[in-house]
Each structure stands twice: as structure tokens, then as C-alpha cells.
Image (cartoon, rainbow, N blue to C red; front, side, top):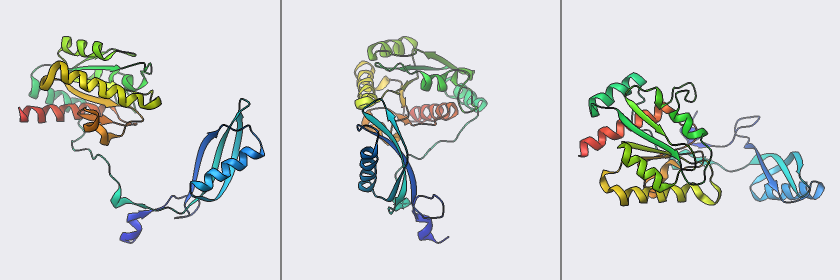
Length: 250
């Protein structure tokens, strides 16, 4: 493979470089030929040529769900892709425990919650609960971590109060509900509240959820943002890394 071929990529469907993609969406149009025609026009405006409606299904009486298959001509230049690279090693639970003992000589205190009106605890539970996620034990499994899971619909003032009372080293916030960018507004509110209440002595602030962009940490006022697919081991390894760096600065 040439350097140019490795740098510029197109979607792969049936054959290399054919640009074939499949996408789904809903239109506020009753199911029928007019709805299919509207879906094809939308697909064409999005750059799919040719496009095929391979599935359409009525949702109630006024909406239609579509699956559309087609080819795009767009290329992606991998040199222009910006991501947050992991700058710390992944540690085993035993290594995390050893590092915590070395750095703090006490247990690392982690407070976690879903803030605002978000009642979806699947994210925070996957990271904190001992059953964990993706074959990894949650932070409750780590001997040198003390975990306080506040659950869902926790207000920002309550989160700050509990973090201070528990003398938290880190606060983990999960946000799954994202309508009207609620996850961004809630995270900014949380970061501002901790800055006002604790200043430079605030705990590490970590936000996570499927709609977060890891590049937004500074904009949101937190130390780290994790996206979908994050495992407990990644979070634990980051906490050790960040605490070590904070100690070096201090």
C-alpha cells in the first residue's frame, strides 16, 4: 500500500474504495412513496449517489424510519484527524493499587454521580460497580480505592457538598441524556461550582458519556473527558497518572 493510499481513505462496502455506506434516519412524513422519495432526495443532498432505500417502516401515522444504502465520493485525510491520544500507560488493578499506596499512603477517594435530571446510571455503574464493563472489574474492586456512588439525578450543590465531606480526590460524572446539549451545560455548571467552592484544592473532575468529545475537556472546565467504550481500567489508570502529575506540580 502506498503512503497516499494509507493516508486517504474512503468507506468500504463490497470492494475496496467503493465508498458504500449505510445510514438510518427518521422523517416527519407518513409512510409511502412520497416518504421514500423524500429520503432519496435527502440522501442525494448528503452526497450519496446512487442511493437506495433498502428499508422503510412507519412510526405511528406521521413518521417514517429509513435505512438507506449508497456510495459517497468523499475522502478522509487521516493527517487532518484530531483525537485525544492516551498519554498514560494502562495499569492492572494490582499496579493501580501499588501506585496509590506509593503516591497517597491512603485510599484514593472517588465520588461518582449522574447530575441534573439524568436518570441513566448505566455509564457510572459500568465504571464504579464491581461487576464493571467489557470484562474489567469496576473501581469498587480496587483495594486502594474508596468509591462513593451517589446514583442518578444528583444536583450540583449536593455533589459538591458530598465531595467535600468525603474529601474526594476525584469526582466522576456520567451524562447520557444529551437533549439540547444538557450534558455540556451540566458539566460546565459542575466545573464552575467546584472552582467557586474549592478553587485550586478541588478534586480531579472527570466527565464521561457517549456524546462527549474528549477534546472538550478544557472548554468544559474539567480535567478529562471520556467517550463511549471507556473501561474502568482506563479511568483508574488515568486517575493514578493525573494524581502523580498533580503531585509533581505541587
